[in-house]
Image (tube, rainbow, N blue to C red):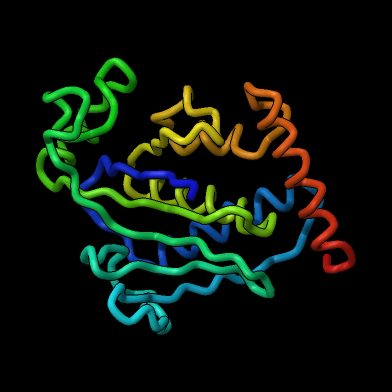
Amino acid sequence: MSSLSVYPGAPRTPTTREVHTRTSSKLWAHLDSLGIHARPDLRVQMLSIPDRQPWAADLDALFEWDEYHYQWWDAEADESRIIASCGTMNPEWGEDPATHGLPFTLARIDDPAVVEQARVRGRYWRIQYVAPQPPLARLVYGCLASALAELTSGVLFTTDHVWDHERFPARPAAFDQWYLRPDQTQQAFLRTRALETQRDLRAAFQGQD
């Protein structure tokens, strides 16, 4: 399972509608940059861990739940499954006591607002998917995490070696510049993956512009 975590730098939690709108905007802009002018719709469903029966998410509700609920995001005519869940930081898990449970030190990114939210709220989000996934899902995954970080003035973080993990924690604007961009990746296998994703996206949307 691949995972991106978002640590907020602002006290306000956006609504699911705001996250959906910003994610769609980022998704469409990325597709436009590839010469793909399709506008795939994103569906959002809520699930509870005990029964795992999905229901339509309330888009006007806050993008935050307890540990027994999570969201499924999927793209129109796509078998993708992107999982969004909430987590609670434990100060004992952090690399630096001064960061109140954040999984990185102040030397990696010195952001007083993110540290303060870790101290006051201790909440974060996880965006996950299980490989293999359709090419559009790989893109939605990054766009969703970036949109949430942008709306919360936060940062993205991962320890997954399937990405340029040396670049994390990352600001959403910087993340957008290199995520699935073959000319901006630092490792050969990531460049290959980005090229394959672009090829697969063009094939999937051929004739749908």
